[in-house]
Image (cartoon, rainbow over all chains, first blue to last red; front, side, top):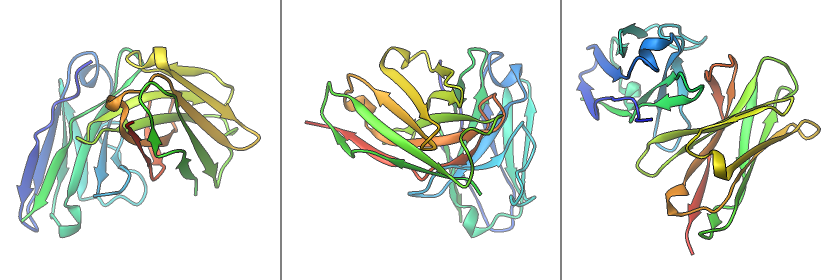
Length: 110
Length: 120
């Protein structure tokens, strides 16, 4: 299975909003509402930010939101802060009962 | 608060077997409803899901690695283990264990990861 498709990089200024896309197929993103988003700072483990397309775990800022339309899921970060600068990965459950990740997007806060 | 900690050798020779352990603290691996996965991140940052185990011992592996992988659980030690056979340089990665609270591969808790390099 090919990885989910994410842009390699996105950037935004403090206070702005950005959106990261994650494109898959009918066998993963479009087939299930089991899309997650992870934040990873350098040298750290991935941290769950969004699950089941649009749900936030306890403790995650409400500046982070998720959505899905067809084969594409999206992560939006509003009110960008310097601490949001990190790599972001999407993942989706698949029809093969496996987990597929995106290639990752580097977010730069200008 | 559940905490996961991976451990194992940082260097493995090509064609040999990679063996890692994940120790779970702050909760019992026996508690129903949780699956325990291994995931790896290559130097280029791509993430691969390797497979999962339930406390009962039932497993499911990524078909791409299935022929070389075994995941086991030791409930008495609250640990899960990963064995990857016939390794090559392509298996060089940071290896993470993670908790799946859903059964559909929702990874809500991750270990800090352990780096494994395959080299002679």
